Length: 442
Image (cartoon, rainbow, N blue to C red):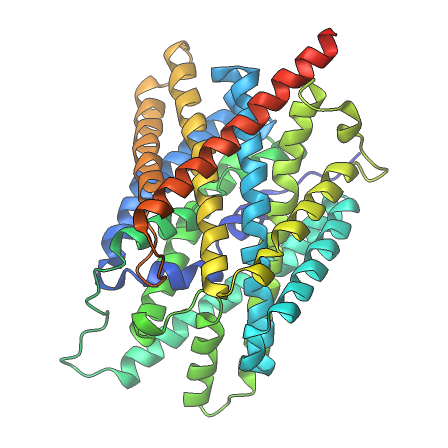
């Protein structure tokens, strides 16, 4: 009999899936508007996602696929899990590039701009993590626990101490703590909402846990994620000017700056190493959860049944390997696109757009399902799903506009390209399924 995951284990899985230090630079661009935007993201996205996820987890252990299927049917459920898997493939190179960049900056800041070295580290990391997950959930759970404690929670706590020290020793009584910057407002709101994505990921492990453990874990995770992300963004915005913020190197730059001021610069290498470990834990969580959902869909005839075959450790081996191959291919964009920041943002924004499509289906499914049920409090679920639907829609619209920090030749062309990309992502599984049905009927 397999050991059940505890509330602590599920909480760490959830926090490590959502909470990520790499999201701080994009959020910090909001400057003096940080409190307002974090509050909006909390009310219109994080809490709705948590409420809907806790409600759905009591009805199905199949994650997003099972949840959307209950309200909107199998076809749209497959589309939802398709969106989740695609965003995973798109966002993985950005997450791994941050890990690689943090490690490289610690030893030689100039190496951060070495595209070939960055690409090599990304490929190495994704295949190591794939191997870990091929070994099964228990090894993965222990790995997540280690990464969450040593590489995420401890660094967040030290960053908080760092901010308090900086405020007490470096600021003047009449000095404005946060930059009065509004050029990045809407883009920063989108980044903050993105940083709250993933609260539902641990639901695929609900059947491996004790009854009620998932709901308790999500409730705890809301407070941990919100407070850590808000405080971390405030500290980063307070210390580093907006024009100097970088998607890849701002965090190690902050660490280096702080420890140099303290007269113990060598400790920056250790601290950046801990941050990299924490992000590896986040990457590990995102690797398996969407794949398990796709496995549910494959088992119901949407994909070849051979894709659902489990190895001796009960891991979907073929799906994991296919995902690693796709991530490796997408990562070549770092070699093709001249600017690392531009390639990072393009993949990050595309992943955000696809992920928001999944959340739209999730919220719509909750609203439709609760309207036909007499066993739940309709007002609570409809309110939460309605708020989430509104927040996800606004974020999706805003994502079609490029951030001011990156120079694109035409904002209109950027928006049209984003819309065309989303249309293509929607049509691919629809056309593929129709072709498969015709093949079966023939």
